[in-house]
Length: 192
Image 1 (cartoon, rainbow, N blue to C red):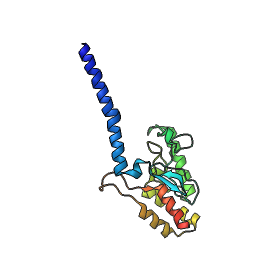
Image 2: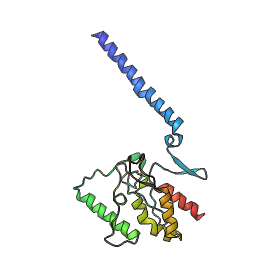
Image 3: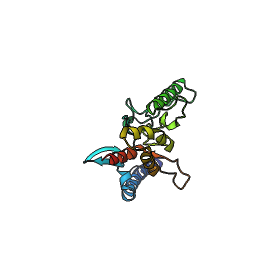
Image 4: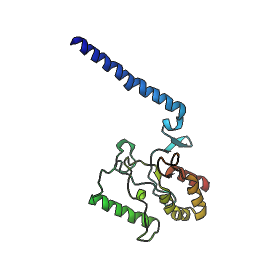
């Protein structure tokens, strides 16, 4: 029985070393070698200062910027330390009220009719609360407001959105999406 206990303990130590240390270090090394930008957080720098990450959503509230999905992560949203969704189910009255309130806000902000259809991603948070992307429909809905606020033509802003649409990988994995931070950085480049 003691021999079995020793064998069990040795197996625990070996498996802990392999799965707890060797495997994570190997995967980190491979990620750093083959995908260095993503492995380091896809940070975006301007003038030597980190202004965001392409992997984490941010709050853009000014009319001249595209706005992303609502966030339920943290008190002010987009808090990576408290990443989570709302955990409210489809029968939740609180969720329905929040969605209706967000839809009214999106319509008002974008000068839309009271019955205009608002894409779901502009009124619901993602499971993490940190999604950096919106649907192309969500971006198209905001084009007129952004163009007006920046004194740009609607066609100019539409071409920018069109150029930034990322389609599903291999045509089947994921959904078409637009990275909000990248889109807003490109808008800043146009302004300069």
